[in-house]
Every structure is written in C-alpha cells, then in structure tokens.
Length: 228
Image 1 (cartoon, rainbow, N blue to C red):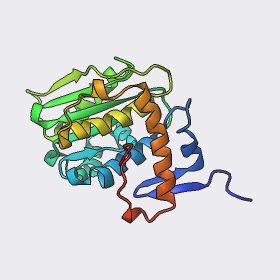
Image 2: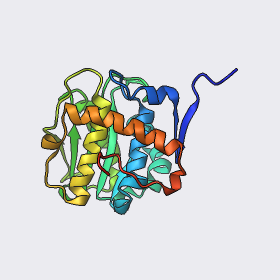
Image 3: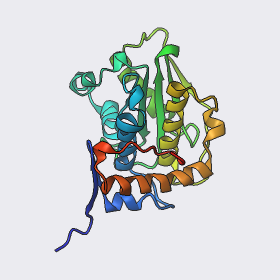
C-alpha cells in the first residue's frame, strides 16, 4: 500500500511530509515542523553569513527548555554555543504538555545580547507572556546573561487578523528581525510585516519546499523572500 503521507523533503534535521506542506494553504495553523524547517533554512542557507551571530532554536528544543530540569538542559544547549551568539530566537508554544505539536498559539522570543534583553513578539498580544517569562528564567544561565541587568520586554509588533496565522507571524517576524539585526535593514517589523506579507510568505515557503525537494539541497541558496 502506498504511503498516504509521503515524505516531501529531508533538509538537515527537518523531515517534512505532504500533510505538513498542506498546512501552508490557508486557513491552516502552522505546525512545529514547518517552523523548524524555516528556522533551519534561515540559519543554514539564507542567513548563513551571520551564523556565528545568531541561533535559531527549534520548536522541540524550545519546548524542552520550558519543561526540562535545568540539569537536563546542559547536554542540549551547550552544543549550541549560546554564550557566543548575539541573537537567540525561540518559538514559544502554549501547549501545557511537553509536546509542542499541540497548543493553540505561537509567539517569538528573542534574546538581544547588546541590550541584555529578552524581547517577546506576540501577534496575539499578551497571550504567551507568562510562558515566555518562564523560558527566560530557564534560558538565562545558558546565554550567560547577567541576571541583575536582564530585562524582559513585551514588544509592540504586528497583530494577526485571524485565529490561524500565529505560526506564520513567528516565521515572518524572525526573518525580518534577522535582516534588521544582521543586514542593517532600516524598516521596522511593524512597518514590514502585515497580513498580506504573511499571506504571501505561505506561498513562498510552499514553493521553496517543492524546489528543495527536487534539487540538490547542498547547492541551493535561494531566499524565502520574494524577488531573490
């Protein structure tokens, strides 16, 4: 019997199936595998020029950070060399379980070393703030941020206009913030990200996955952005 949910793409640590690809058609909630793929693509390909400055933590590791005892985090986080990174990105999921597959909302947490800040970008303002703060408490020693100076800031950011685009906002805001931080983009996230850019990004990611699936991924250096 043929596989009813065939593998579409194997990219680094990301394994995407047809059911994942189908989520890129609205109105669908983006899952951890799509976010994980985009984070991996950003770090390995699109923004590899800044790989020494940024760390994009996968949804599964971010969820592990939230729930695991501190002593269990050492083996997972130390290989990421977070003390040497200027910017650390984590997708935050509100699932009260250890599994990030469930839940109803995604938001974005970013550590900015130069400001000693954890910045929280939530497209449904305030929804994940208490969860993000718990992740900050767990992550603080591993980024080697001085606790006495560390700040948590709920950032003004674009707000979703529906109930299903939170994961897409995390992806689009992450991409834009890396451009701001590492490529000197002067347009702020509030001006650059909106419902229309999120809608377009769904198609761009869908097309990129199909392109990568039919190409030698080691030779592809296309961007998620339109026009690249």
